[in-house]
Amino acid sequence: MALKHLLSHSILALAITSGLVGCSNSIPDVIKIGAAQPLTGNKAGQGQDLLNGVKLAVDEINKAGFKVKGKSVTLELVAVDDRANPQTGVTVAKQLVEAGVVAVVGHLNSGVSIAAAPIYAEKSIAQLAISTNPKFTALGFPTTLRLVGNDILQAKAIGSYAVNQLNASKYAVADDGTTYSKGLADGALAQLKLAKKDVVFSESFDKDTVALEGLAQKLKDGKVEVFITTQSDFQVIALIGALKKIDYTKIKILGGDTLKTTLMFKSAGEVTGIYASSPILEAEEFAAGKEFLAKYRAAYKKEPEYAGHYTYDATYAIAAAIKRAESVKPADITAALRKMDIYAPVTGSYRFDETGEQRYGAIAIYSLGAGKWEPLIRSDVW
Image (cartoon, rainbow, N blue to C red; front, side, top):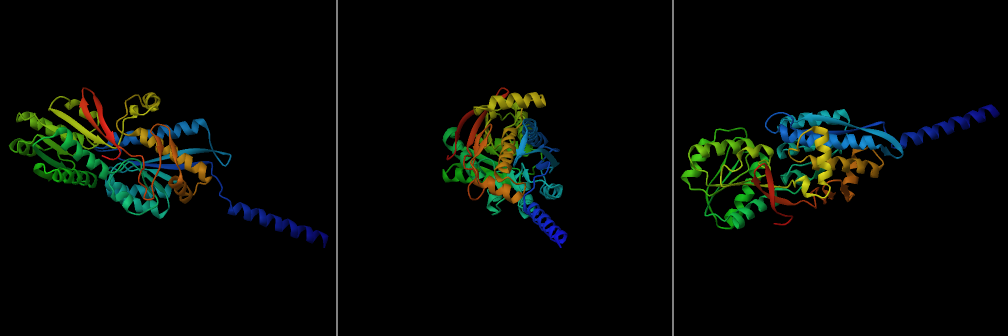
């Protein structure tokens, strides 16, 4: 009887212990973080830069020693190529979910982020995106978190700067037909109309076309002084080439952040002025930017292309949320991200409002000089 009594107590103790373990939020040895960006095609330079920011942060965090609930763990980066294509974005989002990532830094393109968002939301996986279209956070998912200011503010900045600073008599507007580009161009056009400016024409083009001789001729025939375009850098470069052929280079071009790249340096000085708006402030504009740039250059032997410092900060934000939540459950990490005032090593801080918008987002206007984009003005209200 004594032995049976002892065995009963032992079995009960084992059951209780097993139950406690089963109810606990166990921390694995490896925590996977996803990065979904365009790594091939015309957006590959920007996408690779965004991926580089995540990778640099992951490497640093692992090297420093990352602990959750006192346990040493390793962050593992799972990177996928969304090809700047919404359908591909959905496919790779499913791949990341199946791989077991706890959060995702992605995507670059608004159309891709919007298409992929339901996939992440279904599994409560936070999606920290550089995408700027307002529809992204308007989806209503708790998982959609924007890292920068949105297109409503950026469109207002473009229109305001075009009207008040460039102050021309004839304008024209073009976009590349993508969700991001068209939304931004339409918003800027609304600002021009509100100011009762003469808009000679507004037109959409295919996102890949570089056959822009017809557009160049329309600009010349319309005597356009300021051309607002949300087309990509390679398209604007092609357009400037066409403008040169017809001797119409006394024109100012104002674009979105797809224009503000190092590729545009080859066109510096070829027209009267080239300007770009961007929710992506240069790393060197922040106090900690020089340190980041030194680490980036050492790691990749080149200059940053776009916004690697934002995805670098986003990765640190995810790590901070994991520690705060003391959990690797995606829902817990998402909840922590939405509640926290997050220290961001380069840009200073992140704070998301109830819709997932970035509270501290600002839009800047830059002017293209010789091998450099010069900041002119920035604001969070415009």
